Image (cartoon, rainbow, N blue to C red; front, top):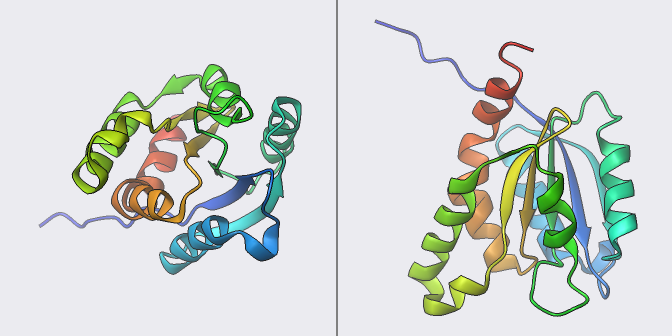
Amino acid sequence: MTETKTPPAVGCAVITVSETRDQSRDQSGKLIKELLEGKGHQIVHYTVIKGVPLQIKGELAMQVQRPACKAIILNGGTGLAPRNQTYDTVAPLLEKRFEAFGELYRYLAYQEIGSGAMLLRAAAGTYKGRVLFCLPGAPPAVRLAMEKLIVPELGTMVAQLHRYG
């Protein structure tokens, strides 16, 4: 009988991108932290920033300098409004894209909200040796992505990324 190995706990940075929220009113960031910690992962950094591309890139640059940070989860700023810059800033930075993440996310969202799911801009991939996720900021959208896709596979993703490195 082969023994199933439990994926490792992961050090995570949680970044909420919002023009209107701060840490006291950030339901989505709190939910991400709660769901990660509930599965044994550690939060190595949490912040709320404005949706300015330079600020988003600067925050990512700081997180990849943290040796304990193996995954970065951004939420917010993915909508279609001109001020929503998170997806447009992060997507070109991804070195290896997890194309199926966005496809599965929209499929699951379609089952819940119907055709509006086609407007959801979510992405995932690798960035400078980290697993990076870019999620919409609404709490139901965050819960869906975290519970159905990210939390179940996060440890495995990070382990695979560092398998031969």
